[in-house]
Image: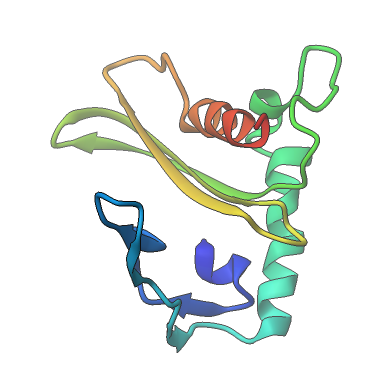
Length: 137
């Protein structure tokens, strides 16, 4: 999802932007580096437009809108959902992958929820909570 948010470029994973010692002095910095191009910028832009419908009118609409249909987050989100029944562990798996804002991405995330027997929480609800928290600051 982050590669689509990044114009089709997959970056080398990194855990931090810098390492700071006990005295507050920056010792190392992480410089983003492209690992490879997954899709063209044009394909990435098309996918982003298509993925925006997931939250606006698609499978995550209920998680991102109140009962009157008003958006819970004032940010354009590109997302994809999925579900499957699994056996290890047994349960119903739902997943939600997203990035936001679409035009100038600041976050990419994936949520996986495994519910036994009946659905209790969907991954899109977890994604909405995470994005709400992120953009509330």
